[in-house]
Length: 276
Ligand code: MF3
Ligand code: CO
Image (cartoon, rainbow, N blue to C red):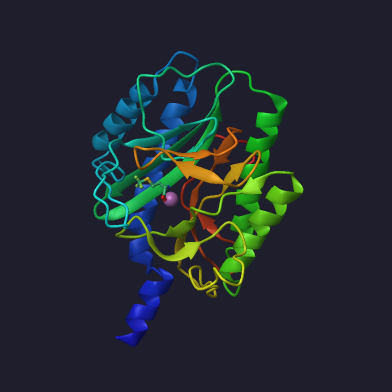
């Protein structure tokens, strides 16, 4: 049916589906709440991963990233519950026996499946004292996310979100990663539409169609912001994405429902004063 597939394409959800997504979003938010005080010098990222998995299973959910296969046809399932991306790692860093160190910035991304519906949320933490420049990077990324969310209202367009994010990031002297983008979410982790954090150039527009936002679309807005160049590369492991210049990168992600007037953020309880 044409109407149904149009709805699918836009990731519009009815009230019951939104409630199911709200429950999943509550669990990923809870993981962050639990982890925030455990992101300290000396903890290993594998320890954080184990804590998160236990929390998720205790809440009757399963980790969404563990075993996830990217849609590029290459079988290389993601091995862990969390993506933990330290300093110059942009996204998809593997938890490991490495200890976090004072001064690191650590992006933690978590996904769950609860009764078939997905939750997905990322936050970048400071480990102890960090440099002013790293703090500025975190602040600019959160602010950019919030500006993107402000645009996620009925009648606006996907590129309004993208523009809001990109403008703030670039005015702050940082750059927006191009290779990875936000997405719709529902019974799949990644649904249409793609939500780029930049306004695509004319040649890339067909990959990221500029759809009109409508009531009930549930989307993940997730700017990845680099201190230096936006260029990234992927490690031999097929997952770990890092900046090519070795400068740090930050990543924050919220699940939001497009509404009339003001977007509804599903991933609440996020430990940052700018998230209000
Ligand atoms: N939040 C990220 C995303 O939406 C995390 C994906 S990790 C993966 O793409 F393992 F699931 F790919
Ligand atoms: Co996501």
